[in-house]
Amino acid sequence: MGENVLTRAERRRRSEARILDAARALFAEVGYERATIRGIAKAAEVDPALVMQYFGSKQELFQQAVQVSPAAEPGAEELVEHLLGTLNVKLGELPQSSLAMMRSMLTHPEAAASAREVLGRQIDRLAGSMTGDDARLRAALMTLTLLGVTVGHQLLELDELRGVPQEELARLLRPSLRALTGPDVS
Amino acid sequence: MGENVLTRAERRRRSEARILDAARALFAEVGYERATIRGIAKAAEVDPALVMQYFGSKQELFQQAVQVSPAAEPGAEELVEHLLGTLNVKLGELPQSSLAMMRSMLTHPEAAASAREVLGRQIDRLAGSMTGDDARLRAALMTLTLLGVTVGHQLLELDELRGVPQEELARLLRPSLRALTGPDVS
DNA sequence: CGTTTCGCTCAACAAGCGTAGAGTGAAAAG
DNA sequence: CTTTTCACTCTACGCTTGTTGAGCGAAACG
Image (cartoon, rainbow over all chains, first blue to last red):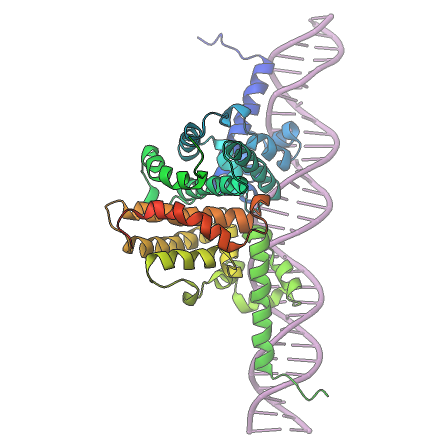
């Protein structure tokens, strides 16, 4: 036993990953302001100064922690699939990074900018599948509907949505969203 | 000129009101954590210590500032009226106190509790006008739809919703919400 | 008038924060 | 082996925060 010694680069990689995971978890749980470098360091079982050394500042750490992998954003399939795909992703197991961003989007300027960007992209994709001069506006309303449900479900944890399977949410929401697509889609 | 001297009680009343207004404005703008007693005091042109003397603590000041007047919550009219009433109130000129609560609801525990309470009441009222065993769930989804739109419009200030008159939002949203009421309502 | 009340300010405290720089000890390199 | 590198820690600085208690000065009161 114990010939599994870790190389230096390996140890560093793991520490950095632990810090990032702890950061995502704490940012997602309590938001940017209440999450402290010290708290993140303690959760990652690491000295606070190490966090600074690796990420430079709390702000940069947040940016890296919140970074959404482009793969996480749904592609541009057919709209209805798209909606359901979005529903499943948005309503179900959102990545910790997205939760972290959403948790802070109302109180932290950078998180707000990030949220506007992500939501803007989703609105673009949706509006691309729709027609009408107010397509963009309707696409925005669809996106905000999903945002509202996600906020209530994942962040406020309303009793009314506790333990409801995502398929049922999707089922109930579909006609409602369909009413916003306009008459022209599939 | 200048015989309009203010009585002591009058001065006190006005100071307290100025503090509360400044608090509401700051809480609504930057949220609980970033709003400081000093900032509120400066906005109210008052010494920070006075804020403490009148309200005891930052937390108590927040509670008083966020308090929603019962009159501000719409009564229990017919559902469709109710929806439009809610729409007009929720989408249009929300009172500063509601914005303050919403701004902090994702990051400040007390604000979250307050939000759950207000949303719960609205869900109750809505569900009261609906039938079906999942009426409460559908009512919750309607409420969260409105929440999402309000967040995007008033707090994130998405470009897509900038300057859109509330009647148009109500018009676009109505069929969508109607799809959630179920087949039984008016 | 003198005395009391009280709205209000000044100055300061302790705690917690993000952050910086010097140092340590073991792994890597020669 | 010696030397260098580098992941990591210790200690501390400066700042802001919420909060406190003593004090001032004008209004209220007799």
